[in-house]
Amino acid sequence: MEKFAFIIHPMDVRRDASRKYPVLKYFPNSFVEYLMTKISPKLMSHIQGVQSITGAQAEGWLIGCPLGPHQLTGDTGLPIEFIYDKIAQGGVLAAELGAKVVGLGAFTSVAGDAGISVAKRLEGIINVTSGNSYTVYTAVEGLLRAAELMEVDLPNARVAIIGATGSIGAVCAKVLSPQVGCIDLVGRTPEKLEALRAELSALPGGRATASISTDIPNALRQADLVLAVSSAGKDLIFPEDLKTGAVVCDVARPRDVSKTVIEKRDDVLVIEGGVIDVPGNVNFNFNFGFPDKTAYACMSETMLMALEGTYEPYTLGRDLTVEQVLRIGELAKKHGFKLAGFRAFETSVTPDTIARVRDNALRKKNSSAKPSPVIEAPRTLAGATS
Image 1 (cartoon, one colour):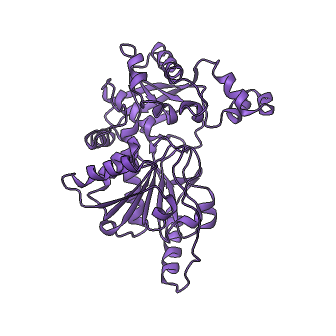
Image 2: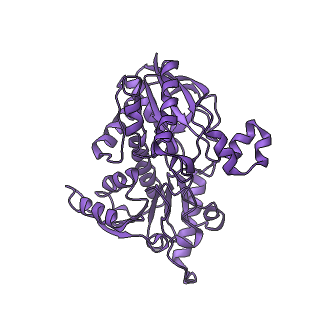
Image 3: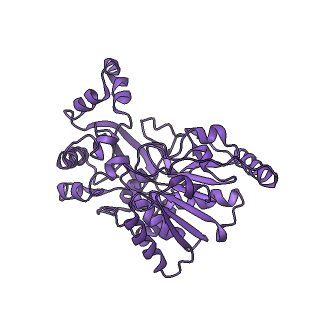
């Protein structure tokens, strides 16, 4: 039996902590966050029943790191060495439980140098992966599959990548480059965006032209496809931003897409990337808000490493390669992991839903009515970590 672990953390510290300690809902968020710094990582659940189609089996554990998104990204002033130590404590607990590889979930995977320093602290104790390679693979796979269902002309499609210079965004751009007509790289640092554009232009087999922007609404209004992968931790994409018939794949956690998009735009398809069907009779003993036997792609990468018996640091740092992404995609096929049906905001996106959105978009495109122009100041990724 192979063994793995995965580190998770609260997305809203006060809300999540008050579920266990109701009195905390009466205290300010800053006080609750301070209390969390005094708590060690805890065992959250025992995962059972993971079984590859090859016959390999695995079990694992969810480890809870008590820090929230803003703490993990340094926004609250916590020293980065403290953050690394807190995450590494979760890895030590995982090793004590018997795990041989631990995955870094959500913002634990982007803190500081994206897993490198945590892996150094755990060297000789347990191997570490951020899970970002499989996140990229499934994000691109989901976006392209949804685009086909929406009858988007892929070779001529314009793709906007929000958070393009982050580790996930950059390699997504490289994977998409041979398959689309134009890529708009959207981020907060023009110099980094320009460097990524130069990399794309030098890719063998790349066909897409690339442009750069720090103005999110302007880039979105031209995009047929949108891949949202920022670490902004807040809504960045709103109903008025999007082109009729656009397909939006939101991989970011917390989400980049405002819920008002699905409430107000019946001609736009929003899906969330990285939800995976896990093979076997798996029980996570934890509620992610997903259907049974499904998990995030980053967690699935950790399970894949265990099932393959490849106990090594795999996805670390911000320089992911296309080769890493394609390799983990092949391992997923080998072991029977696959994209689950589309979801958005904890709700299934059914084939009927997609057909309805497609028909609405076609009707609006054929209509002579034009939407009123939206005039606003540029909205950027200021404050994001990618």
